[in-house]
Image (cartoon, rainbow, N blue to C red; front, side, top):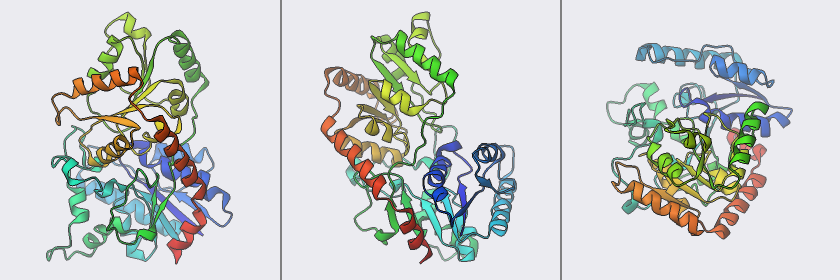
Length: 391
């Protein structure tokens, strides 16, 4: 049986990692499964070095390409890969064009499906100007109306067959949710609930270089008597968070971050460690507090390592909804985006004070969620997922 795995073309590795984990953790041990990846040249080299089959097709776009050139590149690569692999199943993560080769050819699709595609938070807690992270442009503002397109019904003018297929993106035969039911909430009125399978987090194990691990060890040793904070916005978001880093440093914290921050003095330099890519398990286990943007992968690390957390608003409701669920569960506190609340910094300072007083997090709830993560991962049956998809 052949599977064709396709990550989103945008968003870096955020939508490749879950597919990679699915392969390494599940498909690799099934002798009857041959899994092929359609990825760009850089990712192809990385996957091939791990013995993973990749399709030889140009699957990359650039900002200087016209919309028509981008479309032609994407559609051509997807069609070529389909013709070469002849898949029985298509597995994708945020590849919104995948229905053009799956549904169009009658091949069932498994979608890595975060429940941020829906709204399960009470309407009183929603903000009308928020948008899905897939709609966020490089300038931090809404750049497209993808979710409106996917959710709105077909209009009389929608006569193009391909357009109708694209609107079916959210209705894959099978949806794998990379989380747990207590956090990734399905709407009460959702249809085909049996098509949703919770896998627990699809995150990779640390694979940092010895040099980076050595640098981190030196940093932790030199700051062993200080409170340590890990602050990250993941691989995609570019919200301005320098004001929070500045406050933490001014309060004597040492900060490990994936965010670029201009160091102002030598004292700060001794207490700030910056690197775009960090071994997340090692760092999360070594700090006292984790501050993050509540992306699908990163929000699991405070749970798995039972650390108190603060989440930062990014104007994206798929992250915001999960952040509010975590806050309701008592395992983290949420700081609204500056555009949502002028008092965001004071709110942040108050949460830091609560952390210092030991009142930021309910550790019993945190332990319960960690247990649910473990139980969900153990209960996830990839062969059941395959059978559901093919039947």
